[in-house]
Image 1 (cartoon, one colour):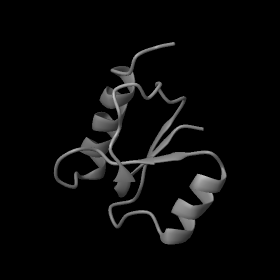
Image 2: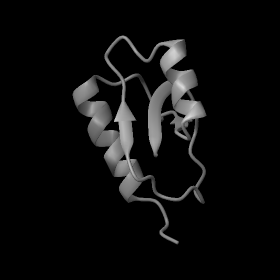
Image 3: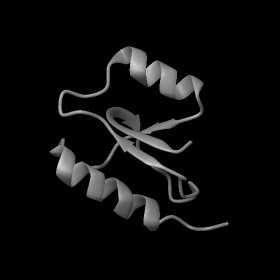
Image 4: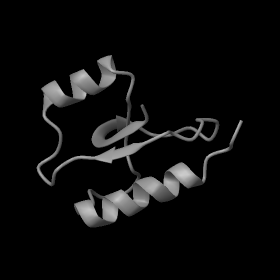
Amino acid sequence: PGWMCDPTGELLAGEDPPPSSVAVGPEGGWTPEELSHGRQSGWKIVRIPGPILRIETASLAGVVLALHRPIG
């Protein structure tokens, strides 16, 4: 799996490896059940720094953060 972006998630550390996938939730946010299921399935719950973004912007920000991770 990869990252689930949510305001309740943890901030990324510089040494976090790039994810295989980035998931952004609906504009109302992920439900607690969805976040729990994501964690159980191996997804890391992460927070995009700054204000809460619209889904169109959040998806781009998530990809940019994923692409700027150290590889290996």
